Length: 220
Image 1 (tube, rainbow, N blue to C red):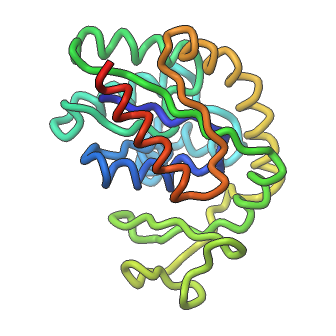
Image 2 (cartoon, rainbow, N blue to C red):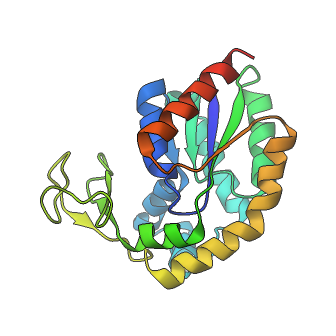
């Protein structure tokens, strides 16, 4: 099963996606992580991606689709994956649908929408801290989920940092772009009877409800 995590930046897609990945035994594929890896390589593609990311603009569909398709051909995602940050537009959703029909014809595809108010998202993101150890990538929040030791990851002991683009101006711009694109994308999955929407106020409760839905959806 390929599970698409929908929701604005900062809605909790990464956190919930990783929990689902662990519980369901599916690889967590974060478009943001793929882009940051490309950006750090300082290739021409990486430079372009960095410019888009730092300005808060979305990376163009053709670049996103090409990058994600290559990732989905790798061995660890042949039986399914948690897709975090892709698709973000109807064009990307259609590309994913067509790719899976061609390469994974038996696989089921479903979208989970995390519907969180904008004001809460801004508050979450500006207080977000990320583990600098890429193999860990644990996410914290200075207000709602602080680390036990300031600036240090509870899981692996690596340094925690705030991303350069986790500021109110960039987040607000990202939210505007997300809302411009999300309505048609959500409608796309709703029309295909492949959408589950939830406001994840309490993490454990939200995860339990999502997993119950997925178990039922698998049996359809």
